[in-house]
Image 1 (cartoon, rainbow, N blue to C red):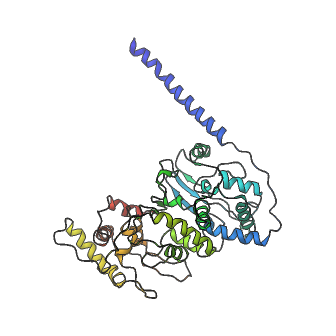
Image 2 (image 1 turned 30 degrees about the vertical axis):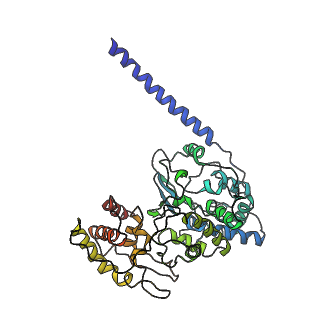
Image 3 (image 1 turned 180 degrees about the horizontal axis):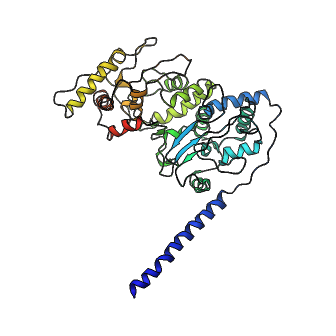
Length: 432
């Protein structure tokens, strides 16, 4: 009799679970519900000074980096952005009336920047970093609007996102916004000088530096308790920009400003991976804004403990008593074959040689992804542009050789503990 009663209770539990899910779905839909804003013809003309200001702001925000796939079709969108929840494709933000934002008013543009809501009312994925842009001054939003609305109108229909279930259901983003969207206005710190405050504003709004350099929670939001502790940038590791910085060579404010504009600074590795897009844009931005950004970022980097300068020079052969001698010997052989001819010589102002590897931050990162990417894919300047480069060795080294080289560089270059799961990192780096 007791078993029969318990059996009769089970369906009611399922109904309660379904009812709870239905209520959650209804709540998400209600929270996410936003009205469509009316279509508006693109502005016939704009103040040239406002457009020029918007162009600088777009460079500080690296807008073209995400909204451009083909350099001949700037801002037409279509770039795949991989997230733990699926792939989001950037959208066309040219003033094309059918496939872009040509029908958007300034009010619609502002709502998208501040709240992550499209003109037609659907929620935008936070791969578009509106949780940073929300604190932009309205004058800056107006200038950005003037700039994008004066770009060539390009026909480029949006690509369909490929999201993992259930994240393709956009109303769920309403809960994400409740957790991570802070719409309070930007406020300067009265204790800091004007240049620092300008840099803080640029870094935390337009440049959205913490989007890559801060760890994320399981829900994909920024872990603000670990701000600038290092994070993810695509399939690269974005190093810490605070007291936990792994850089073997301390940054000066001047070197940081040079690096942000050129991708190259004395004693530091050249920019690679996603950082190349940052440098390409900041190199064209107002130098005073980049100097302010450097002042702000350097304030955090300067908190890193003082370190003795690494002893640069050729890396040694493995010690005979090394606990992983076979792998280290293979790694040293790969180093001698692929690295030594450039890196042992050291880098001068006009030399064709490379940074000595004891100074390369990728060897000191707590995550090996960047080093593995550099070994496999190399570093190349944008097509058609001059710049330092490094060849990739994906076609010359098998997985075991890449693992051995990375492990050897970590031990004998950085003199640091071995990375865990290095083999798995090399396997993932092969995935498109």
